[in-house]
Image (cartoon, rainbow, N blue to C red):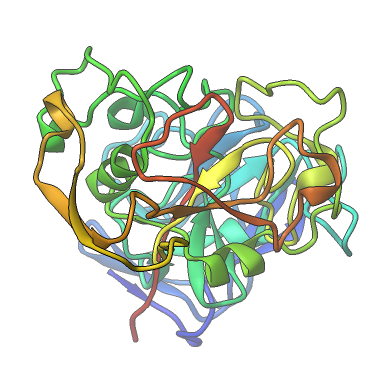
Length: 331
């Protein structure tokens, strides 16, 4: 469906804050025709104007036009047959960090969010993600409370945490209405798997949060409540509220800080959390990592901030989550 000269980069390139072009040499099959772009060709919006905090799909029409649209089925006036979706990008409501002092307030295409069919996150839905250091994709936004409806990364969503638990995904028995009643590590793990993603490891987080303003929390030191731009705490890759807003459940590491004594079985919970037990040595001391620091943590916040304070059964109002997935490159 798509051919390009360089498989190591997307076939689209950002040319200005709100402009994007398909690269010369790209070829796209549309409605039985092979459309070849001999020169870089600018894309145009299908209708209206760019809206900050929105994901856009890129299309090539049978007539050779390059369009982008907030509609991920087809651009206005076309069908999925007359216009083929070949990529997309996120138009953020602020720019990425240029150094280690956060971003800016100018709405712009996040260059690290640009994807095409052969250069993209491995998850089904690539919206709201950015490529970190060419190695993996991370959600631009913290997890919201309605993952089955809005995915795991959406601007303006209510942040999922212990005070505002996410709805249980259908993949794990959800009915579209019932939430977890808490936001434990296990809940974050299930939501991540429901969208084909994983929790960030500590190594992932350190890379993804680079560029944030270090050792500071969000201005006002208050619960941010929703996913939004916090200019000071935007990362190089465009991750919003990367630090200093919410602790984020991490994956890949666990810690038992107690001195091993007698082995013990520990329950994973009751009700929806009654799914077996964990066997550890010593008293209940198993901990999961938390990354980034929350709104009240001040100088402990930052791109290398990690806490081993909570067991996987912990649930409080300043712990949320952010997800990642692997990078897919096809020839």
